[in-house]
Image (tube, rainbow, N blue to C red; front, side, top):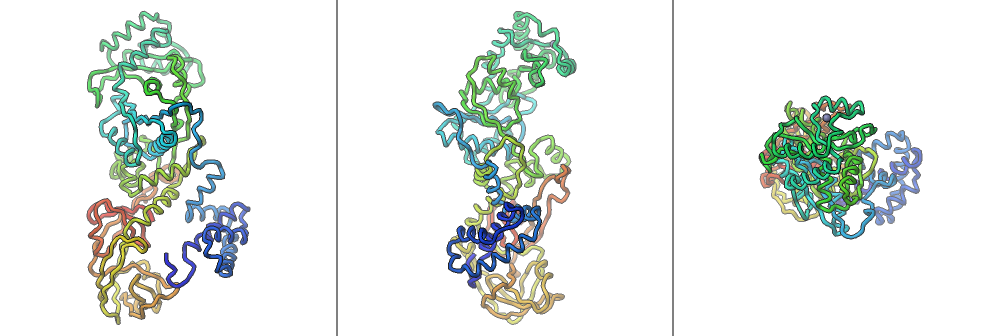
Length: 573
Ligand SMILES: [Zn+2]
């Protein structure tokens, strides 16, 4: 980070490469040197005094970049500079949150999770959007559990959402369960029966399905209001069993939108509910409950992903003479190789292809936290990408680059040697070095006593030739004298330009197992059998100070979170 020997730092070279790639992509693969230089000078004005050198490097870089195909340029940009993708998204008009339309008076928003599974990254991003608008407009935010299917909901899922939102720094003003309001929802159901907009149907589920498919109605549709009301009372009095009756909305049986073909709005579910126990057996369907609850909560703006039955909810709202709500739908947040759908994830848990719902490869908030992603990262990521109506698949790399920027200035760095090999150094006196845990910020120091024995990464040594000089980082320079026996000799202290620098630990070391999570599914939708890798290595002895859950950086390896004693999870490189 410091220009130890006056060289142009890697960061500035990277900026040159990034701008060369961006410029090339926007000009049919051919970058312009002048444009690239002015961008880099803009980023780093201090480079103006070294213009000649920069021009030379830029020319070389542009020749290299222009020799690539546009596809390769794009791939390289995405791999090495994922943050620049935001510039691309800005061009496509997909950055940040647009102002909320139709704001008159107080803005009321809601987070309506169904506690039937663990909170995942899609819920988190929708949560950030709603919360951000609440903050901007000084509005009110509800946390409302859509818990009207007792067979699916469970206590631990309610808590998963509460914890997840708290972790994201999302504060809600009011909280309720839809199951608290069942009797109010019943009243609205009764209203529809009374007005002839709903009816009790005793057809078997299969029959309803077939009739619905054919666009045909059953005889129950023509039943009198009196008969419907009396059946309704009997249903509420628990005189019928599950499957014997449902309440259906009189929709449009011939509609092209199947959700409007007389959908169920109430059904009997004989299953204990985690909150109301066995008090109720009549449960509203999701769409019906949501509409009634939005009215009860006086919600003004709904911001949600587009997997809901909009037309059906509008119909119900009109039939009940509720005030209109401003609805903004956005496409679901999809991440490459990491679907959030339970039907795709549950088999992995059941077949033990993952260690559980909190396996670091999973998209649940529990997993993402365990992996070492910060709540602030999800927030910044969401606000950067904004939301879009068209389907879009996000790449984890942009999220990782935000996380890296947040972690870099505040986590301790420890020496870590993956796949270690013992290196014997001759000609050096034992030393005692005191090094800070961070090069710029004071996060404490540690003292390391060296002898002639070190551990260094096997891969690095194997790439070297006998006679090659390298530096044991922050210590001194050595020359490799034997590759077979892993021997080297001391050759001096002074920094030498462009020397390979190796991480090292002394014989006082701690054995660490690092779990490296990768993309869960291949691009063709199959389970990626290489989605977990294990690396064994040695950390320096000071690493014993790192506490459970701490995130650290192992320079040249990656950021890691301490998961348990002797086990770390790789957050990202
Ligand atoms: Zn029927």
